[in-house]
Image (tube, rainbow over all chains, first blue to last red; front, side, top):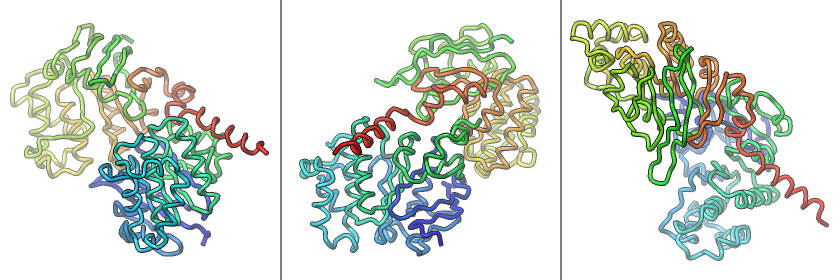
Length: 238
Length: 257
């Protein structure tokens, strides 16, 4: 055992006949921020989907908190604290901010201490408190991303998995979101993040995986990775 | 070498989105030119402009010295320009050989039936579908359909072939096979302009690379020069300024009392 909270071994997955992942292995240590970077089409989102179970893995294993959860449904994983904040937010646009947060606290695990957790996420994102009764669809992009993260936190995660945090957001909002992630990490939350901006990912994470063409290309602490020519090779092939 | 295809200031917008902005470059006779760029860079739009699916808002296209701007796809094909599509759509109810015959009948020449059959068979064999000639297209695997897509374009006897992600969705063995097919196409004297996301493959296949970003040409040159171009690296890896800001921000906090 490596002491990892989440351990993915030789994960294979795809869509229809098309295989996207060709044996992805990664380990997420508790209390750390781990990032996955890679070019468009490398398999980042597919990896997250196969880990949380929104697509069924073709092969390999997903072990969470010592338990093999490979074949469990997404909601069964969420009930154990393995929670995804999906790309593009996937909020309930016609529902209010507070109703969206309620939806996050759907599982038995999360219903307990609902009020306490609501106070906590609103302290974390005061903007959401101000906009409690506003429909989620009317929020700005940055606020929607905050709400998506807050909704994820409402489910009382042990690990929060975030797909594309910075995509399409203004730099000042990105800055704010990363400060929040740092605060969450200091509170002991484990985070697995997919991020398209490599520099940003390396600046904030404790450990990074670079994937290309459905495989792990290289991995390590970002400080050691940033200077390596493999990074460029993973993106540009040479 | 001489320019086979010349793009001169091509632009195309969809509503408010400027998908291609003032793009100019040339495809030289006999080369493999790779077209790369992040998602949404305008690569597939450019293919649709070249083969006449879209009419450019401005700019000119010249093929073998002839102005083909705004020429519809079926007439572009007559000039010797064929393409494959990223999402393959064979005529599902027809066999492999029949699909290829469609290419041969409506390609550079309007071949009569007997000759079209020969050309179609040759194209299918060339891509490695010799065992599947009488198979209905619907019954092919993804790899088989990808080969058929290429064979159909090939049966049109193109001078210039546009390949849109022919390697996507293939397994490593199939990719190696397809790379071999593309190399042999070039040996036969067919000029190739290809879009591909598999970077190792396109970097090793291409004589030259054009990089698109937000509808504009970001760089053009030999693969090794492209892979070392700071502007290209930034387009792929993201803006480093954001990270610097973030690190300086946290640095300031540490200094604060």
